Image (cartoon, rainbow, N blue to C red; front, top):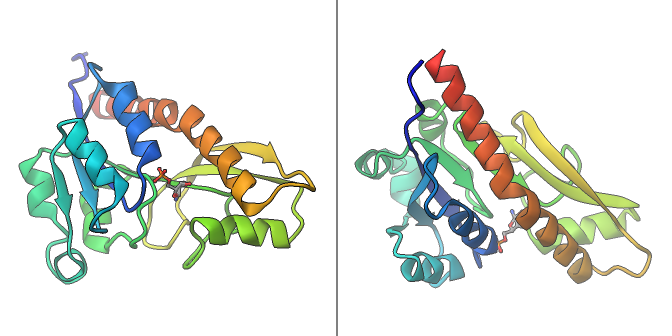
Length: 200
Ligand code: GRF
């Protein structure tokens, strides 16, 4: 049995990048995972400053090339990307990319899928919908990415209470804490598992 080699990971994000920050910090100096590229679709997004501060190359992508070109496969190849993590990335992933990375793209969603997922269900819209439905619980879902929004096989879920005095903002905070607590570990476990499959 060969020992597993380092896995190069690209993080795709559209926003502030607090999850990206946690992931980067977790894998500093890891001999399993290296964050080699940050991909972002939003000019001025916080995640771009994080990439700069952390000395990780970043790419501001454009719709035309992503959806009607090669989905940036050339760039992913250039950085030898083996695995993709979506951490608050708001564009749908093109089929070309899904086919190039089978079971190697995972996403985090700030609710308990299959509830409160799909097009338009992101950020505060999710928490507002959860509160409007008077749910007693919400949480996070980490799942493989397929061609539908928030749809692939679930890898992990964690739950938090929704209290009567919560607001979409306080709920968002609880959810972010859950994400920061679990996402890096689940990424590591998922990658380690996919590595083992390749060795055997
Ligand atoms: C997270 O809540 C994630 O679940 C959602 O977008 C948010 C990203 O937050 N899809 P951040 O940019 O990592 O702070």
